[in-house]
Length: 136
Image (cartoon, rainbow, N blue to C red; front, side, top):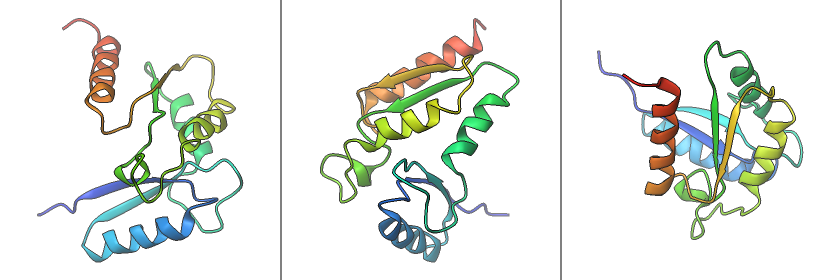
């Protein structure tokens, strides 16, 4: 059985929901499974989303092992990179502030100055994963 590709679409649904809905629809038309995570902080999404920012915190809080939260302050997707059509330089920091309000104190948190697609961000994620997994 062939599995459909999946995309986690992180969008500020309070301000960019029209653009996100367009992107979601285009991906679904191409046969791609899409989950929409609301990273907005200026208000509630006017449309239903797959994962709310509160649910992200709940998932972290309910983990039975160590948790590391890494926020790429340079953006969450190619679309919100500096040259992207959905660029929102305050979005990742505001997402972090909304998430922080709901996170328990046991979560490791890193705010990184990189874009999610930067090699430096990938290296930081892998370093954190290696730390969480411990020596093998």
